[in-house]
Length: 544
Image (cartoon, rainbow, N blue to C red; front, side, top):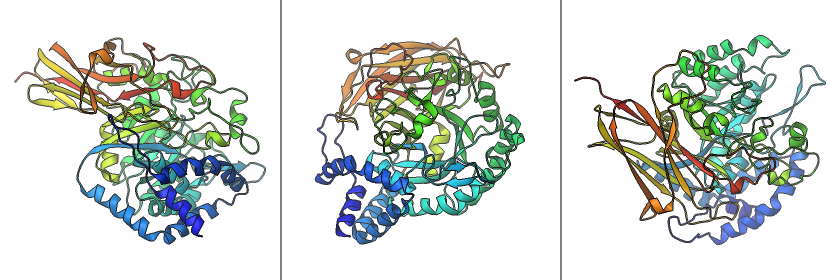
């Protein structure tokens, strides 16, 4: 037990890095972690395949008791962080699967659930890895099947409660990857409350398209999704819904599959404070890193010998981002051009790590969604709704501040600024490019930052519209055009004589690509890094 206790203590010990011009500093424990995790995967895989992963959870819990003094100290530190009242950029991931994303034995009636049949890790393991890879918050999001709602309530939720105790440094939400009626998947993120599990059980039981058995095609329609959103609106604490991998089933650019522009507009029209956005950078990005696991690869069951980033088989991702987000003047810009508050995120979609035959990074290993908030459930969810969010891959940056100023007024990411017609507006972009290695052992550098601006023209007549021709890259900046202020790089740009409503957003990359290019099969994602801000809106004041 001493050895086990030491192992768990290592897992629970945070690592830190000095950013913004300093050298990377890791504790001796962190160095040991690198060795431990190099050999953990095969052992974990064998255990998983025997469906005995519960012992790992038990080990975490029992060893946590053996290290109670340390755990108490960590909990106190986390509690103190929440009491400071200070908003900071908090890294997270809202799309993480556990062993409760089940396989199903379809030879029985009803189908028999197979734990670990699709994703393999316990929720506490996901939380530990999220912490190790620098995340402050995460969401447990398992997808369903026949009567999966009961499995969520009776098994996944109790394990989440244990995980919150084991890893208090990571704010953990209960949610699910919703088997969305009439569309592909989506995150449901439940507000933290005493009845969060019962509320999610009600939603999944009544609206998840895979819940009924025998299958019922009437559950898989677009109008039924709108009914689900109406039911969510009726809750005292309504959840957040974010569309997953929206173009994964697309056959070409603009040729959408399960999820379409018209559907996403209908969601947002029905529940604008619930259906708030989509994954900009989907998960399953470790296809270029995959190593053989023990036994057959679940990934190969779906992809064969292909290795597309994000599992986008026919219409590839662009710099790791979905076409709906990556194309300037495309679908995302069409939504922003209507004035919709429609945000993007980046996730791992973690099922099985790439060292074990999967196509996934650990939560936070590659993609991060940063939210500007205090470190507690309510503040994080409120900032997600408000779009106070930027996303990055490969730890290219760790902070991004986009501030729009007119006189003594200002607005930041997710906000809006109201100015007089003809006013000048100053855009300030500050980013922190950490002088430290990412989880591939690289220290990537930002090579260029783009400022993208589009007009806000109001609602469109055709809900299938997926373009905004007014949106352009207004300016491109390289290192010769920004200045250093302490640890930050700073860019300023002036918009003169603003006469119509607009929005602006920022992206950056470590590549030399003017626009993100279609990702080739088996690409090394670590060499193709991007960050995106969510927009800032500029509105024109009416006559006084």
